[in-house]
Every structure is written in C-alpha cells, then in structure tokens.
Image 1 (cartoon, rainbow, N blue to C red):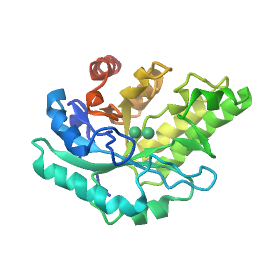
Image 2: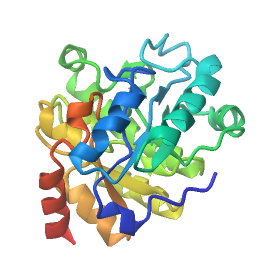
Image 3: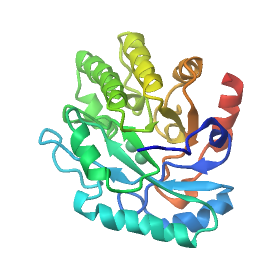
Length: 259
Ligand SMILES: [Zn+2]
Ligand SMILES: [Zn+2]
C-alpha cells in the first residue's frame, strides 16, 4: 500500500490523521468529526479507528472494529469524503502482534487505505496503556521486561513493511512507570527499523494529557528521529471532536525548537 500524504510538507500543516470515531472507541461520529475539523483549522482529516486482531493471550478487545464490519467502515469514510469541504483520508490504527503480518495484509489489501498506523498496545497479553493498577502489580524486573519488549515489537512492526505511521511511540511511559534499565539500544534499533522502512512517526500530543505529562515519543527520542531524517507528523489521537488539535501549538513549538 502506497501512502502519499505523510510527507514533510504536510507535517507542517494542521492535519489530524489519528482520529477515532464511534466505529471504535471514539465518542463522536465520523460525520460530526469531519464537520468540526475546519473549525479547528484542520486542512485534512484522516480516520484511524482501531483494528485489533487479538491473539488468545490478549483476549477479546471491546474497542476494536470487528473484521467483518471493515467494508462498512471503509464505506462510511468514503461517504464522509463526499460531503466534506476538506480532504478526508482513509486510515486505520492496527495493533501489531508477532506473526500476523500476512493476515493483516490479506485482510486490508482489498481496500483503498491511504495509510495504516502501526501501534503496540499489548505485550504478551499485558495491556500497556489500560490502567496504572496493571502497572502497579508488576515487579521492577517486569516493568523493565515489558518496556524492553515494547521497543522490540516496534522494530518488528516496522520490519513488516505494511505500516506507514508508527503510532504513539513510547506508550509504556503513560502512567509514569519508567524502566530502571537503559533501553537506548532497543530504542535506537526501533528507530533504525522505522527509518529503514521509510515510515513516518507521530508526535502524538495525547500524552500531554496523561499522567506522564509528555508527548509520545519523548523529546530525546524525537531528536533521534530527526537525526535519522524520519518524517514526523503531529497527531492528536482524538477520541472526540474537541480534541482534534489538542496541544498542537505546543507540538509545533517543540518541533520548531528541535529542527
Ligand atoms: Zn493507540
Ligand atoms: Zn489511537
């Protein structure tokens, strides 16, 4: 799948490519999100509802689109595109699980996706971004293991070659349970894999509203991405129309400083 939109020119405009509607875990319909977008100075919107093909260890995920409803999802995005004064892109946020690349490719291949966001929300059945209580139950060793394995999976996700945008890198920090070990090697390897795959990464602003109070990924990781010439696009991970450009001024100020 070729993506033509996530280039550096677009990165400097107000676009919103990480948006969830009521099709997955968002609270507003696609139509109302698209209608609201120009009021937030968004020049282009893309929908990226969740697709999680959860393996047995992870269990059923209530906030995923059901694979059998993909045709309806695609049809709805294309319908909204017809009525909307700004360009509307067809995206999807797909969870990466080892060994699923061919299944994902086969499932999504027939549809005209503009881009796919590759995200890691689960590490061996552990939900990285679900709750602080889940993290509290982990030992220091387990916090290190989950955090390290997260970055290994990001590298593996990039190496599949099927994703265009790496979703909210650095997600395990969400509840401020930080690894005590140095993960620079794993993070560097993940960024190398992303650069090698020609992917873009998000500066996902939603982290500023979470307990970690940092964007995804952190400033030092963004700087490393810039050193590798990895394109960065500002995204809001909006789950309602009020958040279509949450913290965007802060994000552009940060990128201006880092470049
Ligand atoms: Zn996500
Ligand atoms: Zn998301």
